[in-house]
Length: 386
Image 1: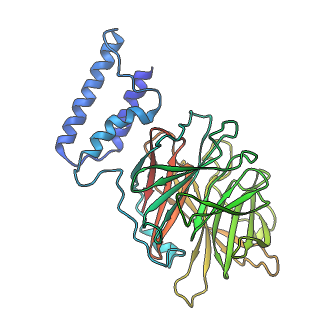
Image 2: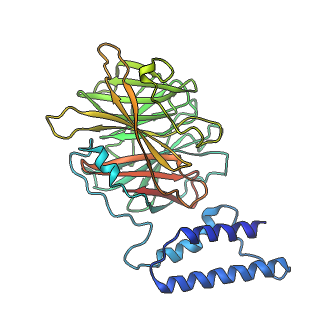
Image 3: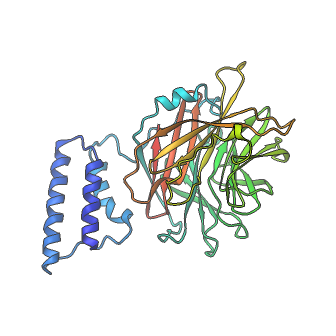
């Protein structure tokens, strides 16, 4: 049975892969014929597959090596560096960026570099965010939350150096709080919500050594953060496992709460166009990753705000507009679904927006989206859409 699973997975990967050079096609055909021969011999008791292990990340690297060699100048896990300017905190036209977003992804691969692996179904990645350091060493870093509180190496934040392609540090979070969820970075502030009454904020000015700043006593399955009228605006999705609740929190520059407003999809009829994809996770009806984004066409234009919510089956980004948010009069926003942007589902079996989704504003006219695998392995993949 294990042999046939590997054989089937290889056929699936071959169907989704576009080899551009004829020589690699020949190599793949030879590899496939060898695989079929080994299958037949193994059934006759004459041979067995190499012991690649049950984790798909180990045996899939055999084929990945072929993909990496298809072009000596461009490896599939080497993503073009991000180009950043000082407008990376908002976008000029979200609709335009999403219209031109490619549905295909690029693979970025990094080494766990001693970080503990994740056993299947026992603990897993929760969120992914990206930060481009333009003042320290001009490098990019991925930040990944992972969760399982009954192990001493979990409830962690992993920091991946984009250029070294490896984990360069791990930050212990709080074992008293479970399930650090979907995360986002705005400017130099990382927001990490927990499935308990706490959401924490960290400075990533020194990206390899994030510094804790403050916390607020609210839980969230996932969180988004951006600027709002000179202050920070945080959105927390999910409260006490009520998936129809979004709490909006206004914070000052020291990340202390000014005011908060609760929006409930089941409350007023004129705010009922909250239409999450309801079958992406079996019988559950909730998202686990989100982003909060500001759109401003010019310095004098009135800013607009959007929630981006990630899911799979189909692999897509649900876009919701926020209108009428008013902290002075305690008015929650009118949340309306604008569009659903579908993208190609990653070929790794346990990978995609269901696991960890996020985005990064490269500049006002460029944006990138990320998804990732369920767990940390010897080689872990991040899927990048741009």
